[in-house]
Length: 369
Image (cartoon, rainbow, N blue to C red; front, side):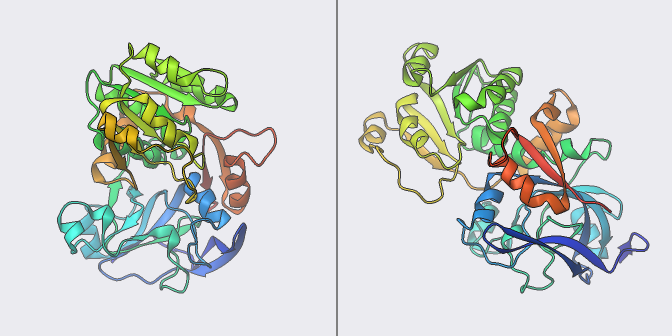
């Protein structure tokens, strides 16, 4: 076993004990064996699903330590784990969100993110030993089945932790719909994953990238254009369908990616934006709400492919980390807020536009050590 010297006996963690309730607790650092490890958290990204967990919409177990976008330094690691993951004490790594068994039919078929017994780090309750699962903490347990990626230690932590939303952009907007050179893409929602999708589609060689958003998203739409979007549309003040028809010469988009959160209207509207035989990727969760005015005949008559998207897999993360390390894009422009670990409640509410005068695109928690 390898270890950084003089590790503390406990870790501060923000524990969700009820909807909209996060409590600071000192939790014991887990013991590890030859197959596991311990991560010292440098930064934990915040995204829309954090808000849904915080609200109680996802009905996740409580008490639990939230946080599923961990970037950190390997603080302690077993010998077999070090060999298996190809990392050692002191290495900076990004940790994938999902824990899979790697033995079920889904895993063996290449879809390990759809594992029959998958778990998500931030949804595992404290009662499930060793308890320190999520990354709203100073330290996090590295399960033997987790998947990790080395990250350039010279990148700023607030930038490097964007491996997660960028990975989603590559998987949801490029890999799943097979976006390639010459394609036209409509991205619904200019949040962090929408902006990540712009970067991913630009890297894939898409000929035309169109981003839609609300009037309140003016700053994000401006950033989308800086990242390579060819056009942006304010859906509250423009005729979106007509504008997309004009921009695509009446054909419609090859790919429509919905990464908007909570709003259900974009799902129904996506069928008006996609071309005959095109693909719609649904990645923005809606809190299990029904979709009004969803006309399935449009799918039939246009022979549209609808693809659901959950999570990110190895190739998406690898492409995201490669893009970050290339420093070809001003990705740091997407980052707006750093929060202290104890201010996790404020971080989530800021992202959800509950704090007057504050507009967050990408934010993260930075634990004190």
